Amino acid sequence: MQDSPKKYDKHLRIDKYLWVVRLAKTRSLATALISKNKVLCNDLPVKPSKEIKAGDILKIQKSNAWFSFNVIALTDRRIGAPSVANYLQDITPEEERNKWFKYLDAQKAYQQYGTGKPTKKDRRDLSQFKEGDVYFDSEE
Image (cartoon, rainbow, N blue to C red):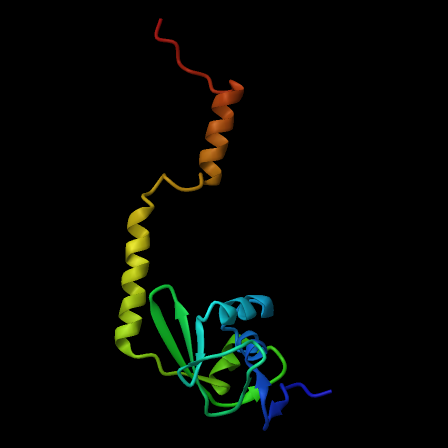
């Protein structure tokens, strides 16, 4: 058995490649992205079974921005995050990155502090108050 992932000289399914290079958390999520036309290969919509090769340009839509990647090499095994640069090159234009950052800032504006899920401390305080374990100082 080899320690490093086996590099392919031929073709690999696009859904598997997205999972292998950590652009999708699971292979089924990669398939769902492709089915929703959020992935383009060489500016064309693809099916999950589309075979890609080194040199192809992948575009992936994340909210309102399109991220572009150049396929450098293929492998059939999922690789660690530090090794992704050996298989994939990020060529996303700066204007698309700015769109993404503006989207993230807009999302932060929707959720004010204290309006989301309670923290662990908030839950403890609430349960302590409900159970009557809180002792108030009497003002007598």
